[in-house]
Amino acid sequence: MRVLVLGASLRTDSLNARLASLVARLVRDETGADVDHAHMGEFAMPLYDGDAEAAEGLPPGALALRDRLSASHALVISSPEYNASMPGVLKNAIDWVSRVRPQPFKDKHALLVSASPSMVGGNRGLWALRVPLEHLGTRVYPDMFSLAKAHEGFTGDGDLSDSGLHARLAEAVTSFLRLVEADTRYVCLRRRWYEFLGDCTDAPVTQRAQD
Image (tube, rainbow, N blue to C red):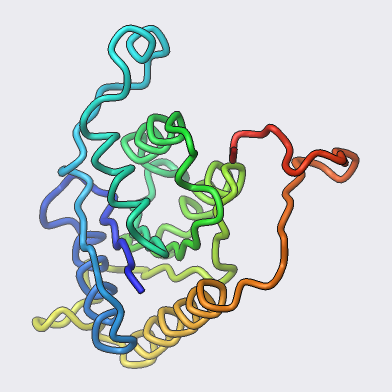
């Protein structure tokens, strides 16, 4: 399996860049999966503008993120929390990449993690991040991991200072990738997705954002 681990902060040495590095190492060491470790700064793109898209197409940064997402079986996002929500740069990237057809977030498995100096660890931002991803058809793993007081949370080796939290993160990563492997290797159900319960149709799929 191939897993894209994305640190969603633009700051090079951000807490979420450190958490993304730890997750990438756990994915590699605990599961043996192939890791594509990415940083949001690698995918420069302007604010989404429909006129710019019509005139010039998608920017290179959005296409690069599309390519790396499409080449992966799963996605892990380590996201900061800005004002109780996700960073604008991350939402902007999702908006641009969602314009690609076929839409690459559809049916992609995602694990969401966060690190913050606050006592809630960025958890509110992860709940906000679930909304556009699930709308696009991403299978967001139910268990999320948020590291509170993250400025005190790392050892010099990049592990978590709290051994219990470190074990919980490792278990979340391992359990998530077991699910991804099962879904990748043993697909036995035809899936449909509806925006609301009354949105039934005899068409093979509904024409929603995830398409």
